[in-house]
Each structure stands twice: as structure tokens, then as C-alpha cells.
Amino acid sequence: MFSFLRPFLFSLDPESAHDLAIKSLKLNPLPKNMFEVEDEHMLQVEILGKKFPNPIGLAAGFDKSAEAYNSLLKLGFGFVEVGTVTPIKQFGNTKPRMFRLENDKALINRLGFNNDGIEVIKNRIKTEGKIGILGVNIGPNKDNKDQKKDFCLGLKNFFDIADYITINISSPNTEGLRDFHDQEKLKDLLVSLNKIKKENKKNIPLLLKVSPDIKDSNIPDIVEVSKKNNIAAIILTNTTNTNRDDLKSVNKNEEGGLSGEPLQQISTNIIKKFYKHLNGKIPIVGVGGVDSGKSAYEKIIAGASLLQLYTGFVYRGPSTAKYIKKELIQILKNEGIKNIKDAVGKGI
Image (cartoon, rainbow, N blue to C red; front, top):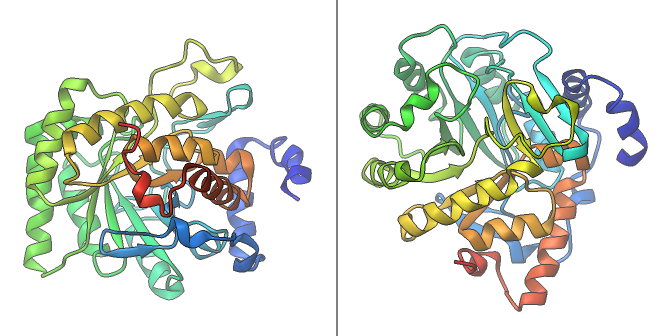
């Protein structure tokens, strides 16, 4: 059906198409069993103290305000991450702020953390409940100079609701946010967040989402701080400000973060580098250009235990997770691998 609807959806500007998709998903039209595949037990992953039915997750940015996450879980995703959620509702950057690069199977966005704010989103999740594993991605409001305070507010409001919380220090669209990749600034942030966990006797996993645009010299420092400050997993990576030269689409020079196929190899290379430094101490969530069983498997053998996608979902439609699961299972069978966990880091 998506193949028939896609020309219509792609005739709309990307943000209007996205809003229509969210509204459609809120109607919860499709049964979960439509998106199950044979031998899916081969993809089960036990990590972060949770049993994931499969490692294919939907990244933050699609369901920013937690309006359709249960419907998205029914589409066959092993988990869904909502947000980025900021303390106060914000509109984000001025429109247009999202651009398709169809010839490159990519998107560029400079949305700027548009979301309904902590209170609305918290109450929405409490009311709706959850039918699967739900992560909440938190970040600071654009105009707040005390970004650490906003991260702390996010943690305090969601540690009783989410299955895990992602600390987003990696968006290119919020001024000063990527400064948290600095070793001392990151340490200060994580110490504050762990203090909140300790004071409230909470053991919720904290994940750290990292930029693809860091220097190789930053990796050992980020790994060291993460190991010493109870980071449960590292998400590699967010969108990139680079890699525009070989793109074909007219929108290639728009300001913002690039996602999709052009990010695929960049993020996979960073996964390999982090995997070598982490020595199995912290698992990796691989993101960037995942749109097939092949691209998923490449990230897994590079060292990722879980995966997330966004742009691939935009281009392949509601059955994306189903397609990837089916293709991934076939690859595992061809390789003689019984469970996906046995493939993690196999290519290093």
C-alpha cells in the first residue's frame, strides 16, 4: 500500500507528510501480527536489563511528543524512542526546516527540538501506557543557558515512566549542545544525573547519544567518562553537518543535520572505533543509514548490539522493520548464526 501512497506523501513538504503520518498512526489502524516474521526469536536481545523482541528500534525525532509510540511498536519495532523532550514546550526553528534528498535517500533537518514539553508528554505516556520498550530522549530548551539543569529536569520527570533515558548531547541544531562532548563538561553532567538517580533510588539506564562529527581523539575521553559514570549504552550516531560534497540533490547545502544513506558508512566507522575502545564494557546502539537487513548487519558486526533508524522508515514506509527483520534473519541463516547477539563485533 505504501508504494501507492508514497507519490502523494512525497508531493507534500516533508514536515506536512510527517504530521499526516503521525495523525494516521494515532488512529492505530494496523494489527501487530501483520508485522511479525518467521523465526523472529533469532533476533531476541537481552540488554539494559530488558528483553528486546528484536534489535530494530525507531530513533528519536520521529515521534517527538510521544503521540504514536504504541502504534509504532505494533509496526514490528523492537523498541521506540520518543523526543527529544525539553522542559518547556517549544516550536523549534522557523520553517521550512526539513528537506528530502530523494536522489541520495537522505534527509536534512534543522527542526530544533520542537516538542510539547515535559508535562504534556509525561501525562500522555502515563495515560496511554506502553505495549513495549519505550525510551525517552531528553535535551535542553533553546533559550536556557543552564542546559545541565534542563537535562536534570528531564531525568527527574521520566525515570519512573521510561524503560531508558537518552542524554542527547549531539544534535547540531541547538547552540552549545555539542560542547558536552568535552571531557570535563560531560563528566560534570553525568555526575549530576547519577546523583539524581542515587537520591531517588532509581536504576534507570542512561544512554548517551554522540555526534558523528567528533574527532578520533575525543573517543577515548568519551569512553572513559562513560565507563566511570554509569552510562548503560552509547548511541552512535546523530545526524552530521558534513559529507555534502558527493550528494546529488538540490537541497544538499541546506543547513542542518544530514541523515540516511550518506551517513551510513560514517556512523559504522565510528561504531568500529568505539567498539575497540569499549572492550565490551558498554554496549552500542548503531544509528545512521539503516534501511535494510544488509545495512543493519554491517552495523551489528561493527559492534552494535541494538539499532535505530529514522530516514529509512520515511523512505520504506510502515513495513520497514518487518523487511529488515526478514532480511536480517536470512543473513544470519546464511552465516550459520543462531542468534543476533553472536554476530555483534564479528567483523572487527
